[in-house]
Amino acid sequence: MVQVIRPTEADLVRGKEAGERAKREYPTAIDVTFMKASGLLVLTLATGVSISIPLSFIEELRDLEPEMLDELEIDLGGKGVVLESTDVHISVEGLVLDALGAPGWKKAIRAHLLREVAGIRSERKAAAARENGKKGGRPKKATNG
Image (cartoon, rainbow, N blue to C red):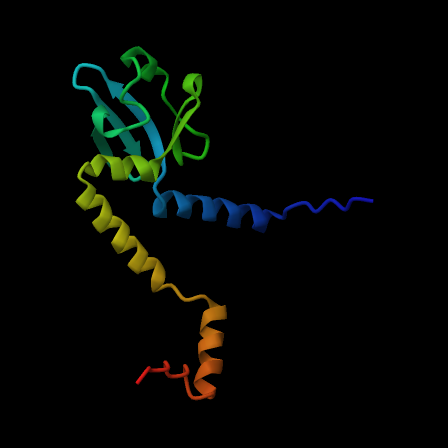
């Protein structure tokens, strides 16, 4: 027999708060518009920031007919831009990187993000570090000499 667990009011409130926090902290889009006259894709983020991206910067869209781009939509969670007729799905993060245009900028942003992630320590990593500390720390690297 399957047991059904119904969320409590507190569960629903926590879930809503987590969703609102995610909207503020992670890049989500609320609108996308293609401006035919200028050839720009305008992406509006939940933070209120709008980014104009030259279509030539977006590999997945640059060869499509401008009329097709009127069908662009934001996916349900705001994490991507979708063009169902061609099965194109592009992440918001990818579009923001595309907006930078130059490969050097993209590399710099990626390197920064990797440094940020590398600094994050899980409880499991912290526990392992404490255990290693009790044993005198990490073993010294062997040297050939």
